[in-house]
Image (cartoon, rainbow, N blue to C red):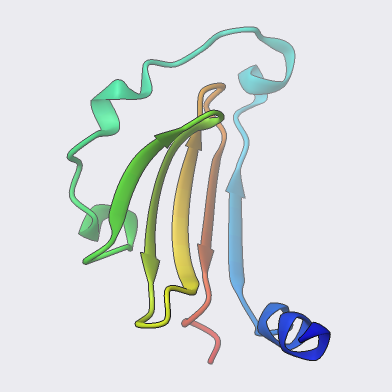
Length: 89
């Protein structure tokens, strides 16, 4: 089991972080409710699922076994994190 856990996490992934300078020094919170229903294709997660989470808004795509292979997370402070596990395979 530990080998499978480690193996699943050693897959090459493309990771992009967008960190606005204002998000570091500001307590500004963005209204992420406008993201709900936004096209998954625009967020590189076609056929994916969306949900609000504690940190912000998450859209993700899984394989048939339920493993994540790509997601985009929008944080309330304006930071965006995008991960694609298929691009480098």
